[in-house]
Length: 211
Ligand SMILES: Cc1ncc(COP(=O)(O)OP(=O)(O)O)c(N)n1
Ligand SMILES: Cc1nc(C(=O)O)sc1CCOP(=O)(O)O
Ligand SMILES: [Mg+2]
View 1: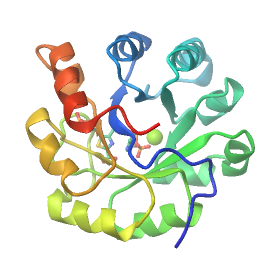
View 2: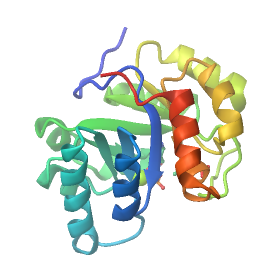
View 3: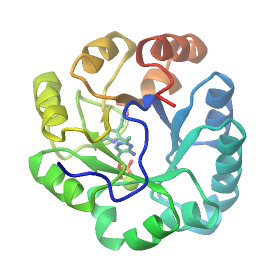
View 4: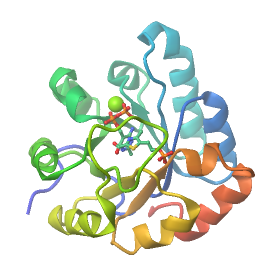
């Protein structure tokens, strides 16, 4: 059985909002979320550094697990809890440097071939997407659906897993029934009519994650 080469994370990361601003990081930490990701797209490092640094400091203040998407150099520089990388990022990122700095690593996957690649890296967790159609990101692949998700959770064995893509409040319970350890959501919170109520309801279903 393969075990992570990167620092371990709890088996169940619980509710895992993925957000694009420091404001959302502040709001969700104050609302009780303890696993989250700052995902700012298509900017230069110098344009996002202040927000990345502030988000990491906030996360530490709440003893939360804050992952930085894409900007792995800044995540190392400011000692984030972890980094999330996609398959394309794996080729260009310095994985040894991320590991040497003691950061956790999450890796995106969308099919069995990508799971092979992720397992070879032996990250801290494996993300499985996209479960349902999503309006948040243009996806080149088809949604995997619940039965494929359950098969993928089973396949990766004891690796912590995170499901992502189109997970609404209404669908969250069925996703968790596959045995996945965490649900990552964007629009279910950021586009909700009442984001605080949505966060409370999702936290009640998925939890804050294990210690
Ligand atoms: C928890 C989680 N899973 C998947 C992704 C997608 O990451 P990636 O493939 O790197 O794509 P971008 O988010 O960078 O567009 C994620 N961010 N978080
Ligand atoms: C950022 C991202 N990555 C995905 C993947 O499958 O890798 S799906 C996704 C967007 C998820 O947003 P929502 O919860 O609004 O559907
Ligand atoms: Mg990425």
